[in-house]
Image (cartoon, rainbow, N blue to C red; front, side, top):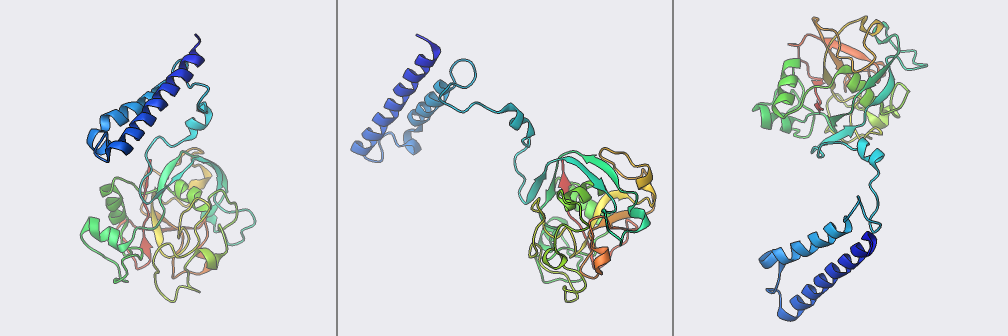
Length: 291
């Protein structure tokens, strides 16, 4: 008797057992072999079906074979609440082709590869920050779902660390913001961002504008977002092509994305802004990442 025939007979026997249990429970009432009361019988029957279906070399012909190539691309961690898994890849970092508004520190455009990582779907909100840090430094209080602002680089770093995350590198941030697009923005500006012309002079609750193709909201506009990197005006001339981490030292840290108070030129995927790590402002917030 070959393996396939043994498998089929075994599955048939297990299914017969399950049917018998179901009929017996129907006749005897809910207390008889109820999985909540006598779950071992039920569990063993299910395990028997699963075990027999995988009898022998790998998966049997009764189940779909596993695609190892696809499996290798799957995230190796459970989904993180409120985060989006960003599959790593290669992109052109810096001044977008055809963008006449770029500054010299956005040049030259250069090819960069980043590993996969997780990123918060939204900017850190006032309620999230308050619950972890015990305070809300924002100017625009009274809006729990608005992004926290008035945070220094140290505040942002410490918050992310306390929730088991970290600040994204500048390269990770731009890769995530572009979401495989090559234009200066990932969509129509009014549809995706709060900026000077449509913000009404202040921050707005996160997630009201259209997300990018990765499912990230407010990557442009609303508040500036601190990144992990030191700022280097000419860093792009010699930065590594794989997972760049920014200069090893400096006086300023990089912020990205523009804000509710800025003109369109500042609200572009390649735009870079910098402040001292102890500086804060009513349009400076953060978003966390993790490996």
